[in-house]
Length: 236
Image (cartoon, rainbow, N blue to C red; front, side, top):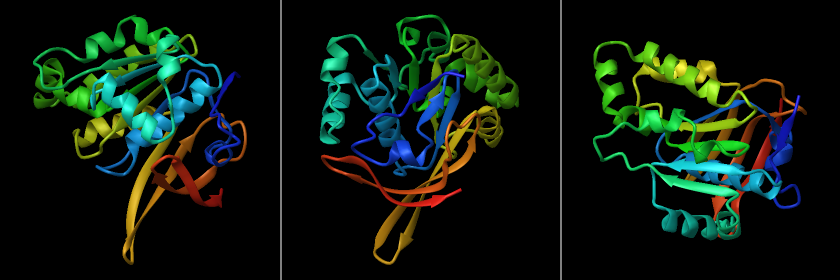
């Protein structure tokens, strides 16, 4: 099986902690509440893939391209060259407009012309799509989500890795369970107050076809100018 390296082995411990690489064709799901680090982890993984020569499509509900470039630069994940060379294709998907968001995602397009597609946040796309909202209200949340995931599975059948982020409180419970159950790789981000500090961790809930041993829980912080910094590791 082909694997895509997480990269940056001489910079941080992410690659070591998470088994070195992600199997091609995987559905990678990152879940967590507000402020747990979903976007930062998506940024780190995307930047690592780019550093290994992979092309990445980024679909974001969070910010326009200029803001994304600035945010990445603040973490020392400089993506300007990758954008100029068309190795990174960035698409802003604002959710305040009354239009379909899922149909453009599942259809062939330039966002699929690479090795990795990242969607941040997938939960926002689902809940802002008027067609899906009607189905959710009709009690068809799980069935509709399964159909969307099936379309996405077809889109990544050529070996493309699909990485999506999901806020657990932003979607119906049935949608959340359906997405996480379908994941080949499932990371859950957690935070806990310890004294006066906030501790962050990434919990590996599922990792199919792992190439190397994967830590079950990865403590981390986010630092300006450094990005993700691994603080402690527990070997599975």
